Image 1: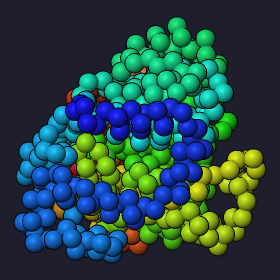
Image 2: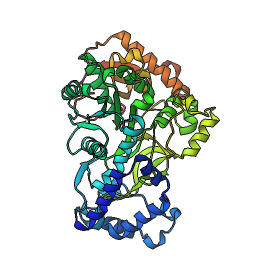
Image 3: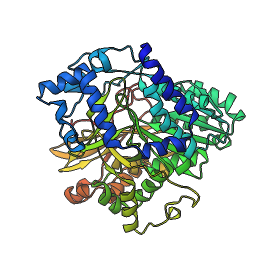
Image 4: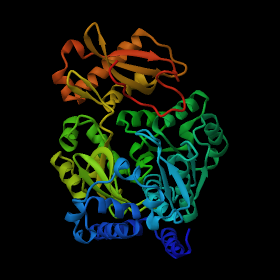
Length: 502
C-alpha cells in the first residue's frame, strides 16, 4: 500500500473499531448519498484511467455531471464493456494495484473468472454488514460465540472474506472465536464436537445447500445441534421460507428470524446487503400470502429480501435489474450486476404492510422490544436466465423448492434438483431430477409424493402455470438420483438448477 494512503486507511480502521454499530449506522443514515456518489464519480473520472477512457469513448464530459439526475443518465458499466476491456491496474485508482492488499476471484459462472483486488478499507464496509447480523440477530456482543466458516477457502470470495470480517469483529471486542475448516464436512463436525461445547452459541457460515448437508450429516452422526444453539449465515442462493423452517426444526431453533441471516453479495461489490430480523419476518409473512407478495414484487416467486446501507452501496434499478455504485479498489460506477430485483424504502415498506393489515411487529412474529433499523430494502430474484418455459409459463427454481421442502419430502432428499422440459412423443413435460439423501432409496411412492407437492405449490404460487398449462400436463415427472450423482449433482461444482430443453 502506498504511504500516501496509509493515514486514510488507519483512520477508517480506527473509526470502525472505536464506534458502536448504532453510531456507524446513524452516520450512514445521516449521509447525503447523492453528494457521496457524485463525489465518487468525480474522483473516478479524474483518477481511474479506465473510467476516464470509458467516458471519453462515449462522449461524456465529466464536468456536465453535477446532479443525481445527470448521474442516472450515465452509461452503465458491466463485465463485458468495462471489466473485460481494460486491464486490472487501469480499473484501479491511479492506474495501479498498490492500494490493494488482497484479492478475490469471481466464480466465472457467466464467463471467464475475474480478479477483484480490495483493501482493508474496502473490507470494513462489508464488516459492518457482518456486524449487523452478529449484533442485531445473534447478540454476539453479549454471548461467547464460535464462528465456523464453511465456505470454500482459497481465492474464491466467500471463505476468506467471511473469515476476515469475523476477525475484524473479534478485534473490535466481540467474544468471538473463528474456525476455518472450509467446505470439509468431516473437519467441520470435528470442530463442532471439540469446540462448540465451550461456547454459548455456534455460527455456521456457508452456501445454503452445503450448510444443510452439514446439519444432516451431524444429525446422522449423533450431534445434538440444539445443545450448541446454532446460528446460520448464508450467501449465494435464494431459498424458500419452508427451507429455513426445515433447518430451524433440525437445529432446534424456535426463532428463525433471529437465528439465521442471508447475505446478498457479489465478488465485485462485496456484501451489498443483509437479511435482518425485520426483513426475514416480512418475507416469512409474504411466503404465506402469495397474492400480497405478487403485489409487492410483481412476480410469483419470492425473492431474497435484505436491507442495505445506501451510503455504502448506492443502488439503482434499470429495466427491473439492479445497478450499483460503490467505492472499492476497483470502484464501481453504475455497474450492472444483472440480478433481477428492485428497491423499496423503509417508509414505503411499512406503508405496504399497513395496507395488508400489519400495524405491529408482533403481527410479524417479532417481539415488541425489537427496533428495526430504518434502512431501505433491496429484493433479488437472481439471474433471469435460470428459468424454463413450459407452455408459455416461466417456471422458476424458487417455485419448485417450495414443493420439495415439505417435511415428509425433506426427510428423504437433499433439496437439490435440476429443472428441465422434455419432449416425449411430441408432448412437452416438466421434468425434475431430485437428489436423494445418502441413506434414502428411490421409490415410486416418493416420486408421486414429490410430483403432487410440486404441482400443488406451482398452482398456488405461479399464476402463469395455473392458467397456461393444460390440466393434464400440470403434474411434473420426477426422477430420483443418488446422492452426488456425477451427471446431475457432481461434488465440488456449483450447482445449476435448470437445463435447456432436451
